[in-house]
Image (cartoon, rainbow, N blue to C red):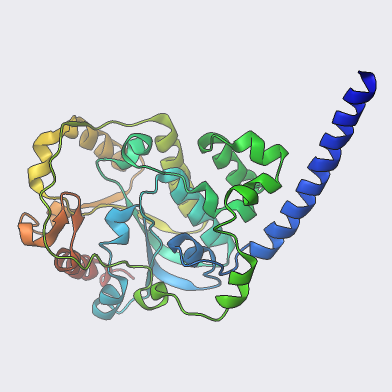
Length: 310
């Protein structure tokens, strides 16, 4: 029995050492490289660039902030680093890596809307842990994994399991195949157009709008990170179709909290109502996303504000 226990311990130690060695090598191989066509990887592979503004958030920013259009109208240089379905923990980690890759931005337009302060109840995968595996052991990023990922301890103590679980995303051959390839995001500067302009009338039920501590904590972390990097954060809410309002329980109370955050942190806040009338159904793909027509209109009006920035 004693020999069996010793053998088990030795096997575990050897397995952990081998796993750590392979994981360390893969961290070095994939870290900051272009190895997939995902939006996250495109942002992670962006290096040493100065921008006048960046836009960060969920699909409410990804599919609305048309950077090439804004740049052409405002005479600025921007980037859209938003990703679909992302909560503030994901936003924080992505922005941190963006800065650590030598990028700078004077202004960050940060999404605040009806759902982002309670992402775990509104988004299917609010922290894209599989996108940040090469940076797992960076202290702040590791902390985000600890807060958000159910497999944190498995990945921490058996490191290679991170890459084994997501082997379909980390393929060595892609490092060669994609090393000199262009992404669609290179041309759109991170904006992703929703090309289907036909509105889809989704049935919906009442949705309780609320906040939770995790999202609030990471919201504050994003704001602090901006200030550490001499970036001015500006809060934005992009359009949603007004017929959704009656189904949003607690909407007024949530917006009261948003305005309180804005005031307490002394931040500028741009709600879409201040940019004009977005009540026309022809501007929307669904309740919470503009189509290309609505995105163009919103971007044109945001560009007029950006053009005034020094």
